[in-house]
Length: 228
Image (cartoon, rainbow, N blue to C red; front, top):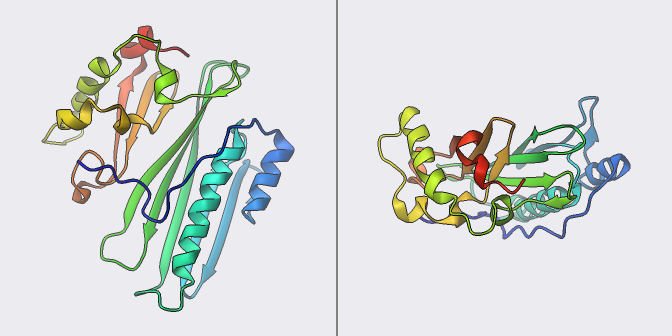
């Protein structure tokens, strides 16, 4: 199955910089949003031609790439939505950011998962994911490559676990091996104390008609492979 990518633009994540609380407020302000008592930044713009509705947790330690991603997503969307010749408006872009954590407050990991939903006037709106992960002790971002110890083969464990989970969720067909054993399909993930969560954008491992897919792998199944 093809890799969905980001329909509006290639969203390039800048270098990771840990941002304190004041920086979190500043990041939200860059997007012209408001931080609520729950420490969620919310951006809502409603116009006749489009709606822009973004939210993300501001307590994630590495705010810079989250804000950079949302800024570029917003700008790409507005370039299309504000075009006088835009086809079949109104358009909509939603981003719902959810935080996850594992380990003790002063260590462990933190994650943010952005669920992006966009409608550009077509018959089939699209949903895609972007995730951000942070090693609190090392003060460094976590990627799929750095998540596991060098020399291990995590997909030998993850791929069958993902298929097992999806079959329990009612997916009749397994993820094809060419996708299930491709590390590029597993770039969007989050960590909790009990689970390793994977997020597959619409059209990434199943036909687009199946929608976006999430899978849970028990953390115990990969614990000996993890580098965090």
